[in-house]
Length: 164
Image 1 (spheres, rainbow, N blue to C red):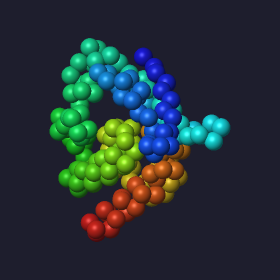
Image 2: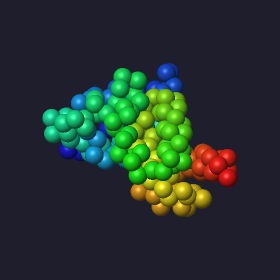
Image 3: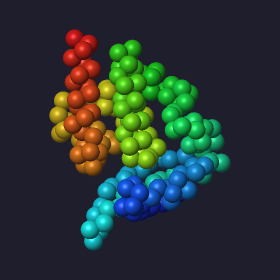
């Protein structure tokens, strides 16, 4: 199923009205998503394109089972990514997850909207050195490169500098 959700920016509360998105994501498994910040007649909106399956079809992989109450993924949900990461890469994976959690909390979104586990693992495996290289990774659209690119590259650079 596909759902397009547009979230207006509430200037009084200084945040996006995410209630609609939360209703859509309740009891579903996200297959794919893309979010874009748009400006229409001087007002800002997040538009999210969400492809999902109903929880009954998703079974044990539903959003409810993948995430605990505070939005952090369970160890079970992360296990498959850590299996193909080296010990050093797993350490970086944990650092990137902490960064993602902070970004998500600032924006008021679930962490997977900022970056999926798969995207974090792909960033680690690719180890991009420039915004151009980062933009070649599946899931790193123009908006994510613009919003998070410099910070991600800095995290990678600092991590590997400390290790050498």
